[in-house]
Image (cartoon, rainbow, N blue to C red; front, side, top):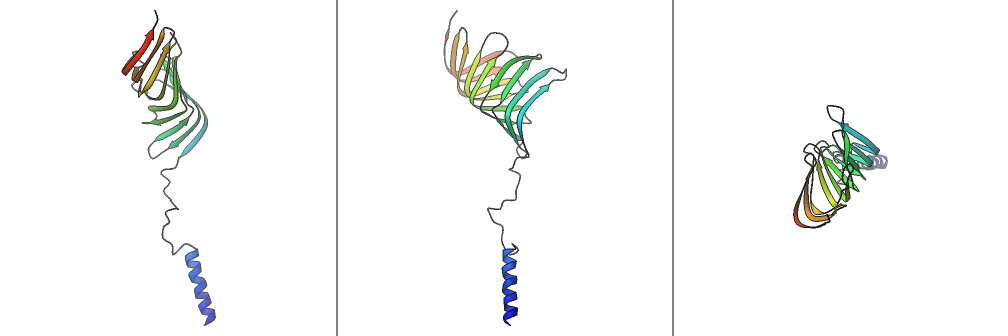
Length: 178
């Protein structure tokens, strides 16, 4: 009788210890949809148009892609925008988030844009949204733009890269020297 009772106790302990009698633990999450599907270090890529001309180039320390939302987190990105195959702008930041199949890029923290060709022009802000299809840059954050003739600050900015236009949203202040 004691041998049968001992075997029964060992069987019950093994049943629960083996996990057969346990309910799902909130600490054991088997849903992997929030996990990244790839993590790349040392990014250096470029995209071309149908004529083989470079449209933009991305250099970054790291890119982590999340498949569920089709978003990527990019660390220390440097984006070079091209116009007619010639580099026009270079934009850098501490972090970026891509969305909409990498057509939209939200740059965050210490965003610095510099015009490469033509008159020197720099743009500084804390957040900047870039839309590849529309060739636009927008922000609602404070912006400082500097050129050899002076500087302009505003809260909010829209830039159309195809038309080479800047539109300041509000609280515009600046100095300009002829």
